[in-house]
Image 1 (tube, one colour):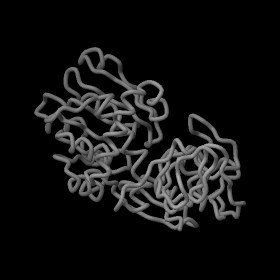
Image 2 (cartoon, helix red, strand yellow):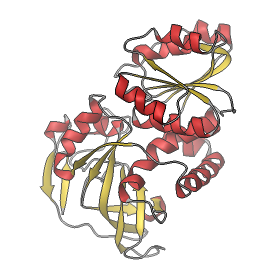
Image 3 (tube, rainbow, N blue to C red):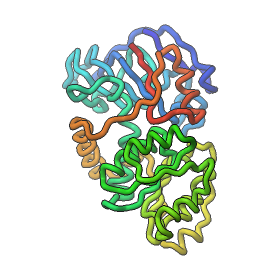
Image 4 (cartoon, rainbow, N blue to C red):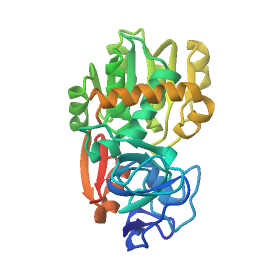
Length: 324
């Protein structure tokens, strides 16, 4: 089978397309014929050896996939031909992948592989945030930073669905126009406008109730300053490449709650809420009320270009690799 391989930590340009032996399924495992895989910013960190958990090379990157079951191991309740999606740590940028059967999800009828591959990580991150960590009420002002990216646009979709008034903050008119199309009430180009001033202007000085921040860097503090009393700021990641230093006096004076949400540990900290959130999210996906925005697609041999596209903050919504 063909697979993208990280032989040593480095940049996307250091990846190679290689021929590897076809995998086999052990007990509790399934071999998936991968049809589509989604690219996420942590994939860039993973191949650079900068993610919180390091995978020793060589490995095939990619944490989201969709395809059909090829073979099953002992004790698995799936059959060859079943259409499934999966979230894995690595291994999705390959024509075949071995997956723990407990991590599989059946793809609803009428949903294509690209949508199924691109839905899981970003929408779960956004849904856990807005359903459990910082519960949204109808009419809340919700600020989404990095609103044109995968997690950001998923947060826009979900907050709109929950009845919030969304302020989408992103860079450039193309990203902001997509946010408008997805239901954002207001948009702010934070590369060209004063983010704090615009947020306060939009919310009539009362401030926003929630800030969702998957970006970090220079945008975090002005968004925090635009929160109203008792507001909630949720940090999800640092796609801008810089971990911000937050003045804690702002938290003190406004009674703000500052909280992190990391999808890997959410299941440990909130197992009951995760089960509820996953069930609700799956229902919304099956009913067609939530779908990922696919901003770009690449063939498997151009996986390095797909990762660079995400790393350079060019992506709008999700980037998908069409495996075959």
